[in-house]
Image 1 (cartoon, rainbow, N blue to C red):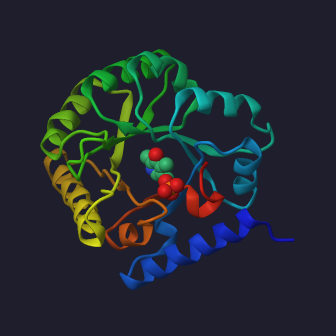
Image 2 (image 1 turned 90 degrees about the vertical axis):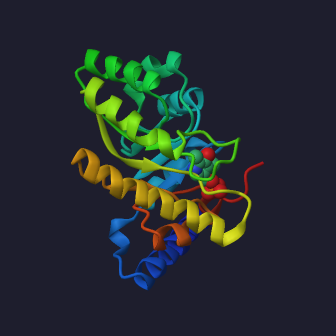
Length: 231
Ligand SMILES: *Cc1c(COP(=O)(O)O)cnc(C)c1O
């Protein structure tokens, strides 16, 4: 029997593939990250058994509890996608494969130090507030280059892989695409300025991932469309 989650994954993958095709990209170049806040370990494990390789959690405490309860025989990539407080960096580091929400040099220094102590290189994405909405985390667009410069100069144990943003809630398709296009443009500028690949663009959620793929997303973060509405 095909479960609801399995069906949803199939449908989301088809939509990613169609969006990729519309703009001459390959579906394999877009990673599906299952966003798992409020979901049970059972739901998450099912998504992984259905082929979703990456999980995105927002909160440190929730992530740690879920990792403790996670089936030992099931491997997945764990990404932190929510705001991280500096005083939780040490706790969360052993539990994550990447931090997608790096938004200040202070946090970068702390994470870098903790990564160094454990002899790791931690992949990070720099979060940019592309919409200017006050409720959004992330550095302002003009703060990106200074942040990246600082990370590259001072944090050798952090490995910046790309940028992350959340599309605006207001303004419809035009505003959302505008924010995604801005993230892509910022990444292009940063690649030139710092001569690093900075390949990843994490953008697109349940309501806007097709636009994101058309604007160049390499990583969509999808919760509701996979698991249903959150309570
Ligand atoms: C909740 C969340 C998502 C996914 O949202 P859905 O609308 O459920 O797909 C993606 N990214 C971040 C940072 C989130 O907090």
